Image (cartoon, rainbow over all chains, first blue to last red; front, side, top):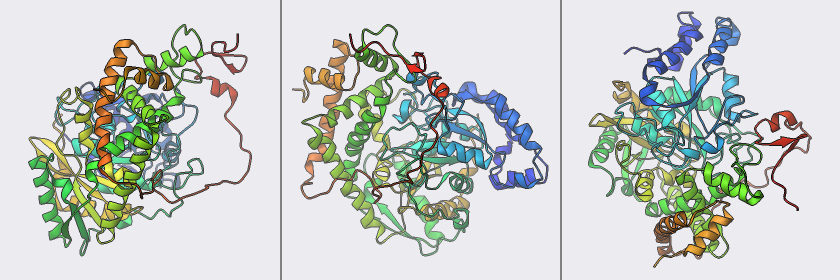
Length: 486
Length: 96
């Protein structure tokens, strides 16, 4: 089926400029498609149709003037529901925030306003971004547009599924251990986790503050670069955002990767990675070789410790971050508490889902007196070793390449019985967050009609090289041109 | 033998301010035991001389200009409060 969203941002911008389409057309395309497929996909938690259409009408008056010059002007976007949006319900897919109406905008939301994108609605996710399948949402399970029996991945499942299904042109997700890249891989779209500090986290409902990053999910690498451009940069409201120059990402999309040195960690193609996934990566490497790159096998020797390190650190940080949900200032409050402590305890027991409580318990344990050194501090030390693995490889190589996920999208319900099995889906993405480096997932094949993703990892603040390689690969292949037959 | 006792689970639940039934405590004991035993994989590594990483970027003392800004308006802030009275957020009485 033909959709306006089959066009890239740059093409839609031209069409707007030539008055061949209007912003209203773009917004209508979104809501029309949502009307057609949303009952199957269930990507959205909240729609903002009235305001979006009103904004579109006003913006249509500006077409042809200087005010419409911005590249993202009028482009319909979906926003993950852990990014606060003033006056637009934001739940983080948790019952504890079911009726939360934010009173300020996240920095990325303000930046989107400045770029004049139009927010179509808020996207489903695993509760507080804890999960790999969207099955941990407090409200609904988003489905994979390529196969409705399968998960879209997580935690940014709604963000990836909505783009794959053509409900929005692009979206924002967040990535703590793979939550942008893994759903992008499962849904056959492009998802980038920027370098830690590249994008402000102000207004991102915190899960694990030393790992969380907001990033773009798009159909093409070029669109991804444009959207990252709009949201990047240091922010006085986030002291962990980095004061590092933001280059023009689009300029890096030259198609030229001659002489590029690729490292392929043997741990990323080892046992536990499906044969079809391994083969798709080896095929991708052949494509990149033809384009003039060279690759060698390397080792990231501490990879096998990443998962345990991640669960200790992220759960510890989460247990502190989620202390703010106590039924006092906002969110759900239990009825008839006996006293204040009882109010806290019952509110949290009733408001949080199982996975969130499990992680709060693990994190509180790891931080508690007598266990801090053995678990939390130990994990922080192993994190140093994992980070050094990456530094060592990047001394000789420009990018690291492997699969994004060890398998294609799994069936809904398949991995819910054992949390540790579920966690294993993130084994190839988690080390990237621990090291704080950027990583992208781009479509690189199919297995039984399900998309596969190639992960390209770069040096700190070198999104440009990541994009250059991803774009060159995309232009040399056809995978990104396929669409789910919804 | 579980690495963590039922009393420890209840203690952690109290620290985390989570109400928990006896049944739930048993379930958490089993799950936490599994996760902790998985985490003990890290003990294979000698980290005596490794510095911990709490933050990946080398930044310290991020300061801003000491300038007063307007806070959020009281009306707005109270909008999401479950209970409020005379401009204050209301909770059950703390002092008898």
